[in-house]
Image 1 (tube, rainbow, N blue to C red):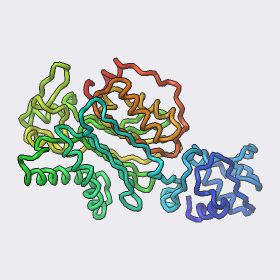
Image 2 (cartoon, rainbow, N blue to C red):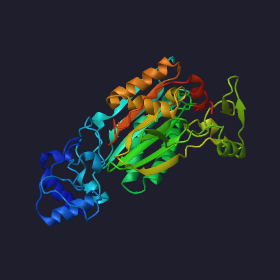
Image 3 (tube, rainbow, N blue to C red):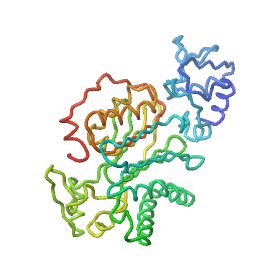
Image 4 (tube, one colour):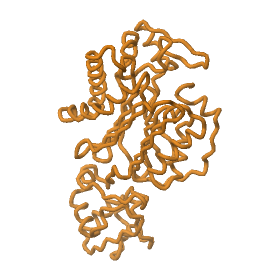
Length: 377
């Protein structure tokens, strides 16, 4: 789409052009040039007859709604990001941090070692992160405090966000080691944490990095799309790497595999006593372009939720909720109700199709979830 087309769209639509409106888009126009550019914008054949009273490209008599542009629900009432929309050639909604839902419950543990953070990192990049600490909260605390800073410093010098996240994870791990070096007998010497971080640039470019068994999941067309793969010894590639590094894998009485009989994951930040046996802080990353007409939300979860609910069940429950804040609270409450004993933390980030994909299937199978969880599958 040309910049001129979007500018004309703004001028013709008035103050409501910046809102997600599930309502009639009335664009008065009279000139042939308007007809030509708007037909391109709506991807209709140029031979169609156009109405001169409303944006009715197929002469069906039905006014066009924002759904045709890729923005669906009117419960998320946010402006469109005009510069990225011009650059990418399609309307891109602004994701407001005030709409993001977050929840963290202690569960049956004595202490909540989960941490999370949501922020506007730069003018164009949003930052979302969950950290699930073990062996104490020190590693998760350190990541909560410093991970964003390392990423922000790297973004100023590097455009590739996957490379930025990879380097940030490694740098945070080194910094935490130096931090512990000055207090070798203090708490946290055996602490570690998972880390799942998502960056959203220009409202459309999503990049995720993860170590451990916290997860990121995208709801697309009502289906759960996993963006991360758990780093556990069940993965052949991870188990082989551990063995090549001199480590070993054992199973506890519950059938849970552990690295050197201690750690249920093969990658983490911290856990420095296991670094020589193959436990690394290098994340796996994934980059993708959002399609706001199909993508409802991003969910970041710790294993207190993943252990008891699989990705599609989480997706189904969230799709029943009115807003992301309600969704985050309901998921954490439901995980507790289903019997999780661990801390449970979730971040829900709404996108353009929020509320579009309602699911009537919200049944829960403990046996299926038990088998498919990060700890057991």
